Length: 359
Image (cartoon, rainbow, N blue to C red; front, side, top):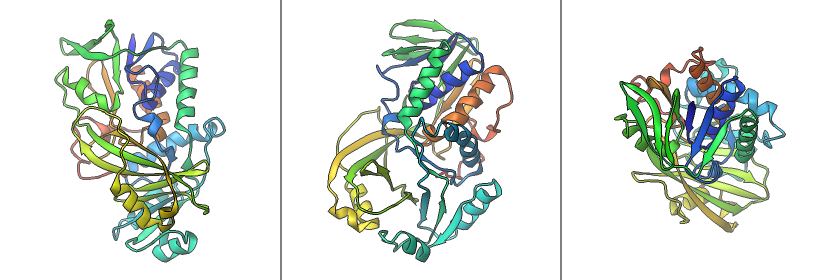
């Protein structure tokens, strides 16, 4: 039996790609009654090539092959993606690296940004980059696509089932303990997001997952045409959401279990009005908050640290857009084949990218 722990976008993608590769006897276990209710439902849906590290750019390039094919089904809209840099000297090397990989992002000066997007307040912005092929898609639709096809391929989904521990015997993972009994396994795939750290500890494995709270404000949109905009290094962003807009920002690291809270973040509101003064006139319709699973360097962990175990977690807010590549890679690992992307940088006990923060 191949067991997947976690029914978010990453775990469900893995279930689909395992089954599409012809593998059988696959079970996905999710503690909630519905898939994607912990983090995926709060995902902004941003799709971008413009990452700061080569490994994440490669994940985007590979994932975009699927996202483009499913554009209508997942409501993919190429609004473009504008990155605002608050620090000197970071834009040029990032865009140069992206261009080398075939990503045709362009550098914009602060003056060009103001001319093209006059509603933005540009003090503090040094430069920026823009790529018109980036945009937004619907995470729930992609999740539903994976689930429907995985089920058609014979994958079993056990929702409302809590995994209590993994079972390790003679140096190998041989199964899991749940609140509904034990399951033996050929391989366990840990894709439990914020729950991965706790489950890793049941077999003495230290998985460096931190819980970062994210605040999302649903506000009345303003009458400007705009792309998805993100500010580095604060992580502040704004995107279209129908006739409204979603405004979000990374919050504080929280060393506690996942809890949903509906409380406004003054910091998010202040940053939003500072960058787009017209938002002060917009009413806040709703405040959402969730936790994301983040690693210290904001790179995912994809590794086989123990026989019988594959880890695919810590996507640091990028799980939705990188789920197609991740699903394919994990399927290759299970089959003993070489992955489409070299994932040696994403090992659990990596050292060489500790100081390279992916944004």
